[in-house]
Image (spheres, rainbow, N blue to C red):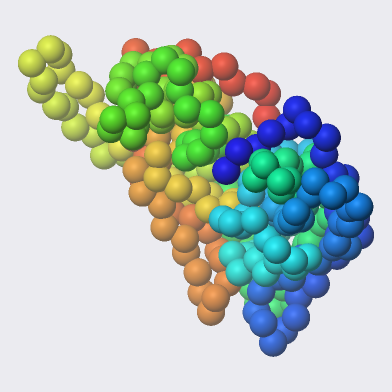
Length: 273
């Protein structure tokens, strides 16, 4: 699909509305359809983007362009600390089969509504423990789409070809990681090991951790501690009870200080909790 941003664009949709029909069990996003009298435009479609803050990073939710003015988001949490923000763009297809995407619309917010008193009390207790015994970490999520790395991406193998690349940091995509926010993380006792390689001895520090996050932390994401140490997420497990999110259990690996990830530009992040 060719996204041509140099030609004229249609305006983004207006009147973004979010509802939660109980019978569907999913979040419904609707908007006013965009019209055009331009004879060169043969089809109008839409993309829906979601973020966790009004001015943060928005990710496209639909795989294929949407032919109508509605989108059902089935991937929403029940944690009452979660707030979702949605934006919609207009796609216009012309006679040359070019797809032109508009700017994103203004954002519309949805706050997860959970009235279960037992869950709220348990979650408040977990948050109190986390804030009083944990530390603020920066969360960076690994890129799985975007601009391909101009320095080391191999089209033959479909991935990065240089593990020491300082452009994509072995992700295959320029920048490597997206800065998200700061959140409290409580580290658990670490497992340590010493590996022997032909070049050197390698010290492995593998601490456990738990946190409460508005998004699911995934394998290979990064957590950067207040002391500057970078941890890679080896595994992540979402702890739930009766369908309600409590917290996430993590297994981490301390990254070697000589790893190129330490050279990554890191903007200042703001606390999420």
